[in-house]
Length: 226
Length: 381
Image 1: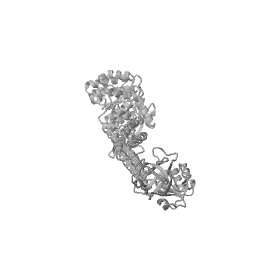
Image 2: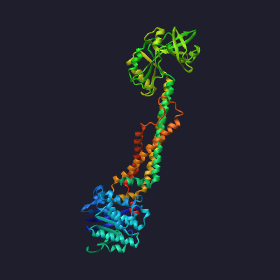
Image 3: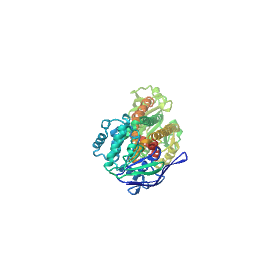
Image 4: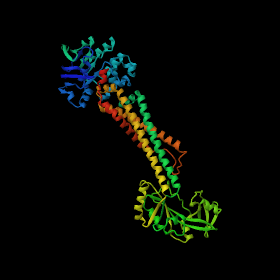
């Protein structure tokens, strides 16, 4: 489904090059649950943004269905993000001035999925236990509720590829469990998931696990999907 | 959802948007205030200048203007048809023509000036502006202040002029000029009294400024007039003409400079505010891009917001500016053509102008927005 070839990302800060990703080759098949783990600052977020068509690599390619997404016009990547990818961030990044319901509706609206939107929003809210919080703004929610709202927004657009960056980084045990269960359910429904984490309990969920030491990816284990 | 996003975004950053709204409203109200005030000040000045009398005297080429000024018996006569011919030509800068037959006469040992008048309207003259000389009916006269005193006349009193009995319609206020000695009468009657049928010895007129300044107007008239009525020369009362021109140019020029400064400041203020807003909304940019929003969609969010602000500001500014111009100027500006009021015809242009200012001012911040790295805040955070 998605593949990288000699993918490199170098940031330049204060005239100094920082290699975030170094000639990385990885292949993710449709339906994989790929977990990338490693220490903080090893380039996990950068890798997810590169895979999601958000960040131009310094060199190398990101191939989606054998097409390098960065060799096409920006419109191609926008369409790719809109119709294929669903991002989830550690800091949720909900729109602060919209209610939970409108945050979820925004994802549907951008994908022109307005038909049956109300039912889909309610069903996701029920599934993630935030039905009572639909008319609240993010600042009125607990951290766990915010992350569940962010997950609902990600799933609302029914993306084929979910890119989750430390989704449980700030959560308590109960909320971690809810997120992990939801991720597993999505995987079992055939979704492709790439999850960056350093949370032991989430690493275990992966059908593919990679360890990312600064810039370099090591295939830690691979197990057949059950 | 799009509009909800726009409105919620605007409400979230209400301080910045309030600043933009105030800046735009101030510009619009100032613009409307200055435009209305200058328009009515100009009208008022036109009226003052017009009340000072005709600024153009048309005489036969061979005549000596001094004879005309002193109303002597040496004035050259010409046909009253000349005035009617002139009035047919709307291209000329001159208008508000009055045929005049004037001559010194002696009544009971007092020397006065019999002045036969007939306003000859041009077909494009409107009732609103009108000729400053009102016509007189047969048998009615209008007296200059000194003439009335000399003849011991009051309104509706009967006066006999060279054997012709007339009633006084009006006594004019003192002007301190030759006009104080005039007895105004309908042209045909003066022609009868002086036994000069169909004849006049001057045409009074008013040169308007639609051609340009004093020199341009005079040059134009000197070029065009002989084509229509050969053998006629024109004498400009320069002070009246120049005063009117200066009054107009002063209001127009000061208006332009003031508006340029105000527009510049408004554009700068909105641009700086726009940059600030874009900087504060980097995270939103990242979120929206990650959700698949196009840059067109994101730019449209800003454009629609600024468009709504511009629309509301232009309407608010229009009413504030109109109200201020009326309440502050109405007691000062004497306008008899039409009183100060809201000039609705300026509203559409005001809206277009405000939207244009807002869009121009937001252009650079938008360029910055679409050039920003959407991942920057996502990674930093």
